[in-house]
Amino acid sequence: MNILIVSHQFYPLNSPRAFRWKSIYDDLKNKGHTVKIITGTFQEKSNDDIFFIGNQKSKTFINNVRTRSNQVDSNKMFINFIYLILKKVYRLFYKTFAWPDYSMFWLYSVWKNRKHIDYQYDVIISVSLPFSSHLAAYILNKKNQKKWIMDIGDPFSLKENAYENNKYLYKYLNFYIEKKFYNIAHQIIFTHKESSDSHIKYFKINKEKIYIGSPISTFNDELFEASKSYKYNTLPIKLGYFGVLTKGVRSPENTLKFFKNSDFEFNWYTNPDSKLMVTQNKINLDNHKFFDMVSRDEALDKMTSSLHCLLSIGNLNPGQLPSKIIEYISTGKPVIHFAEIDDDPVIQISKQFNNLIIVNTESNLPELKDKLNKIFLNIDTFNKETFIKNYSAGAITSNLDIL
Image (cartoon, rainbow, N blue to C red):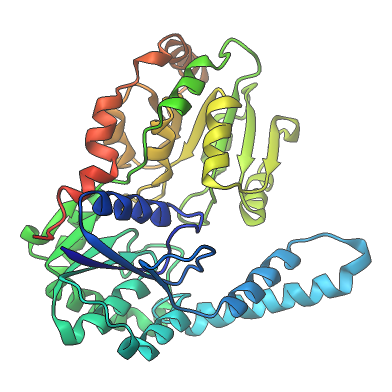
């Protein structure tokens, strides 16, 4: 089978969607399929299967603006101030006018190059975030009219906070386009039932098109051995958080209140904006260490060899599932997930794994410590088979409508 995957985010970008579809790509190749990728992620190594579309120079400039605007250098205050202004102008422009999202210029590049993309495919798969990937697939498939599979990472029209575009300008256009695509698509993949149900209800989607394709990761025996050999009797208990926080979607306030009187050591591997969201709360900074975000491989190494357990903070709506939770679980380490809402989809996942602890505002620290100690003593009982069956790339590729 000849398969074309359209995903703005792809490996080596350090994002859950990029690694999800790199793993699925590898599994499809291993099963004998011919797979091509169209992406907006620059490829440092040449690969005949991957076609990069975009302007690397402009991306480098934007990344430099972001980096320099966050730097503190007394000798370059004026230059850093200019970069800060450029960053704010950039954000204002995109928040006001960008459609369908931040990758609109990549989408234009796809449209401009559409006649030069001559891959012969039987199935086209589009991946969001961002939603632009679906528009790109629609543009490329309009003439060929081949089978179309959509993988929905986060809501687009139904997003309740941190909107992808200006909802006042584009609300009705968002709905029209999204509903149109769901009507055309042959299969639609959602990461969890709560997201699927809300989309079915709002867009009147045919339920026969729906497949629940959970977030995935790779179970690594070496990492699991590192988790098992960690010295869990050492103090203080070290928690690790890897990823970003987003106002209105994933906020740390209630989590920090819960741990306020604890003696845990928090290790935050995050970006400057997320660090600010943490430090704005009344916390003992002596118990909190902040680090730059690291690559996936480095993050997994630190998770298993440097920390007692991992911290996950739930989203404020059931339509979004923090995909990092599956990667956490795959290490076999104890995972503490703070649920902000009663219908947090991670609660259902916790029923499958004994290393995943759910806490909320009504939980208490002594009970949490008891649960942690039980996991520390039984760290080698992680259910590897259940994980591979339900949360590996093979679990997704076996259910793709590609025949």
